Length: 82
Image (tube, rainbow, N blue to C red; front, side, top):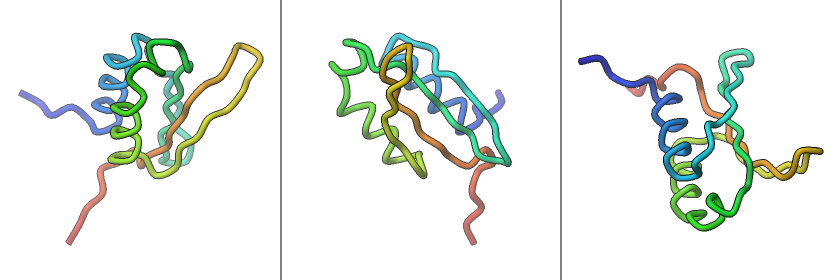
């Protein structure tokens, strides 16, 4: 059985929590996940925040024409610790 990539694992957990598939972007080795701030997301915000704080390097909220989104960035490759 193969391991799930850390970015994919976080995306799957966010999808499970919010009911929305996060948008994924890869820019210069940094993955950015975005998802809409919906009633479902707000209702489990503490668990979402745990995922963001445990795995994200940067995070925030943005207001776009389609409505508010939450986002996080993380290294696309797993960190190697000595």
